Length: 463
Image 1 (cartoon, one colour):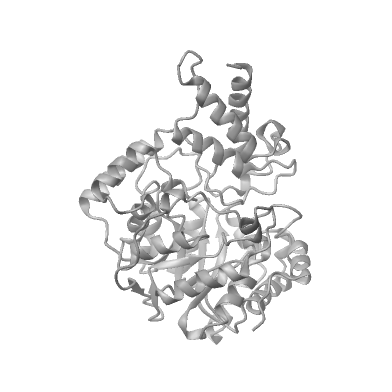
Image 2: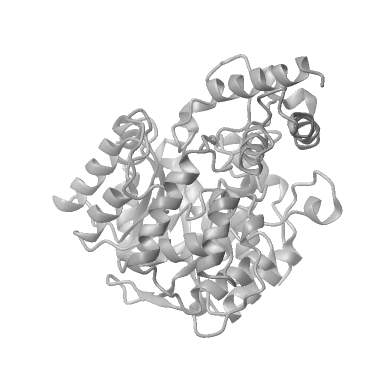
């Protein structure tokens, strides 16, 4: 079958529906910084699988997240965001060969290209060898009318080259509160439409992904309890940083232990997103890395997070956005088979989480939901560079410190290399367009101004 990238009609469709705009957008295919994931390990056994109690599906504990695919620009050193179909095909072939059978995408991912790319890659294999998960990503109000949402779903089927979806999610409910959920899915009859498609087999499992107000999460589960809708699965954020930890009450994300516990007591399978927090748990402080290496010398930093996310028995699959082959191979090694986290290791990870939190990094997962900025800032790149320098010890604060000059140069030179000057933090005017879209509840303008104040202070101290 002929390989395809996103065609002009698809791009016009997505732009009209408010999913993509010119420039960087939601789901832009920039890889998370997973450099700490690289390992010389390889899969030594059989992939661990979990059984979906609703359908009997045997699902690989490692799921392929299709939000961060390789682009042609990554291969040729340009800004070309066209997906590299050949590289994607190789990744998918390797994943299937090693036992991965769950692939999660969305109309919004990779500037609208993800569904077509994974559809092309998977269509080269028998349909009964994999499960496709996609989402009804009707975020923009112009996509809320019934006919527009139906059009979005039908286009998903077309680009995925399939006549049914194994796992269909209401995408990222929680942001904006319950009124937005009602407008996106209930008042327009779309939830009833999806339930009808499930009864006909066009959708095999119906669920939702959650980011935001816990009141929305509880209301959605109450619908399951009172029989309004049966949720076959739910996708939540879970990792050792978010499990049973004290959080700022203003943060819209809540304890992952609570999210998982509510599903477990109802027997609803959990699909896990952000096991690495956008790559942050693959790049932890060196003191934590040293402790991890003492315990498991041959294991990657990232493997600890993946083992933690896969340990609870009610988890169906753990999604990983594997942009490069070494990411895939390392995760295959971790899950072939999965060695659950022991009690001693669990206690260690709780201490590690506290140490990581003490670094005061910005909790940005590089998801790009805050983009595009109307004033052209590259918000994820700014915050990622700032966090990386904190972790690496390159945040200079005391001009009398003998290492100050080196730290200052490392931060400023790296900043200019990572973020073009016209896209840096000094251009933020606090319009607030970004913050409501942040799944982590970050006050983004405040963080950008903090970064800019720090940069200006470094420039003033021209040592």
